[in-house]
Amino acid sequence: MKVAVTGSTGLIGTALAASLRADGHQVVRLVRRPPRGSDEVRWDPRAADAGDPALDGIDACVHLAGVPVGGHRWTRRYKTEIRASRVLATRALATALAAAQPLPKVLVAASAIGWYGDTGGQEVTEDAPAGKGFLSRVVHDWEAAAEPARQAGIRVAHARSGLVLGTDGGVLARLAGPARFGLLPRFGGGHQVMSWISLTDEIRAIRFLLDPDATDRSGPYNLTAPNPVTDAELTAALHAALKRPDFRWLRVPESALRLGLGEMSSELLNNARVLPRRLLAAGFQFEYPTIAAALAAELGSGQPLVRATDRGLPAA
Ligand SMILES: NC(=O)c1ccc[n+]([C@@H]2O[C@H](COP(=O)([O-])OP(=O)(O)OC[C@H]3O[C@@H](n4cnc5c(N)ncnc54)[C@H](OP(=O)(O)O)[C@@H]3O)[C@@H](O)[C@H]2O)c1
Image (cartoon, rainbow, N blue to C red):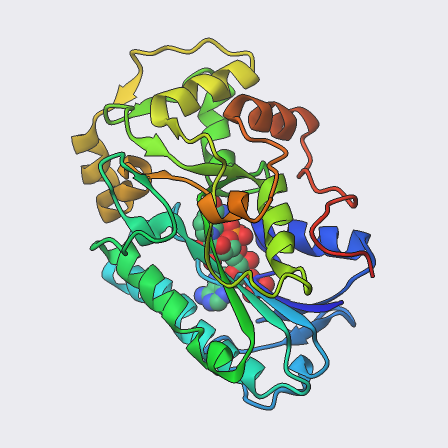
């Protein structure tokens, strides 16, 4: 398969491109800077052209681009960027894909469990409505922006990812720093449920959704492990994986987080038990269904866990 990937230099994109290539698929990286190799094509996320020749002949597209949501205070300007880099870019890309010749078969578009917002720890699956906060509205509009591709007859799957645990970036890279000294605190009460997925299973699930024969895999899919954990359990598991003591009394109060991080603190305080109902119903099997196994594997190897033997997409 020839697969176009946006955001291919990020945590998920780097691992996905490596996994696809390892199985003999051709990856076309859509990059915002000048191309550095024959596999790269420049694109402007705000104005992807309908009729862009770079998209002709591709079988599938995985759209991961977007300015990082965590690790940066949500100023008014940054919120505009979070939204625009997702909603405008997705609409432009979906419009360009709809004009590609021949029509690509599938678009797997990144989305997020931010769709659900804070559910007070209640279990939610894909049929739950969008929440009401800033991120929920962004995710809602982000998914809706793929409409031109859907209208053109391209199968569109939305990967509503939880916290993706990989050592090369994202939340695990941020938490592992203090955890290596046994100093990762509980955030707030520590009871909030974190819905997570190992980077390995994230890549396997994206490839599962890409499978050209799985014509019924469209719409939203929660990419979360079947066993979410509380913040306190995640901290304890991380300290255990790193063989560090776990000081349960070490806490950052909710008020301090809200003061220090502003609205972005919702990333650490949101409480939602998001279950992967549709992936499991479709027969997807998690390689790392529990947090202990996922952390041991990820932190043990020091390498992103992407294997060429991943199933879900036939070798080229
Ligand atoms: N990691 C997670 O825990 C997680 C959870 C839920 C959802 N997601 C979503 O999944 C997608 C990929 O996640 P990731 O962790 O791999 O992200 P990442 O490491 O932050 O990478 C995202 C990529 O997007 C591109 N990008 C950065 N700023 C951009 C901008 N202003 N406009 C357009 N593109 C921009 C960059 O690629 P180029 O420089 O190559 O263009 C960057 O490498 C994101 O949309 C993210 O919101 C991630």
